[in-house]
Length: 126
Image (tube, rainbow, N blue to C red; front, side, top):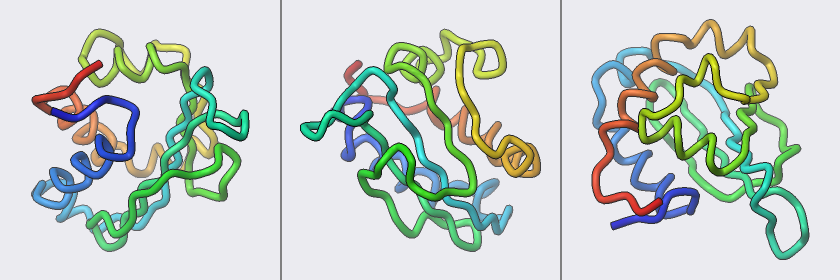
């Protein structure tokens, strides 16, 4: 079991993404930063994670700074991120801040598939 909102969770997500045919075939190159606005690090900044995709494969997953340079940033509270991952909230209607939404829009099929993967993940503690 992995805990949502941890590096271990995003590493497991990366494993699943790397086995997914839709994401692999997309050949997407993108860097995404996911920010938990209300969860703070020891330094007092919002907890964030970076996922880097190259040619449709996740090549890097790590903790990040919320203001780190990325192709797009998804920022929301822990409960909103968790609600989306569990399928309880619609990401298009939830209170989420997207940076560089035009780049994200070009990756819509991959983002839709990512949402499906999040909802399908098992053994997650919220």
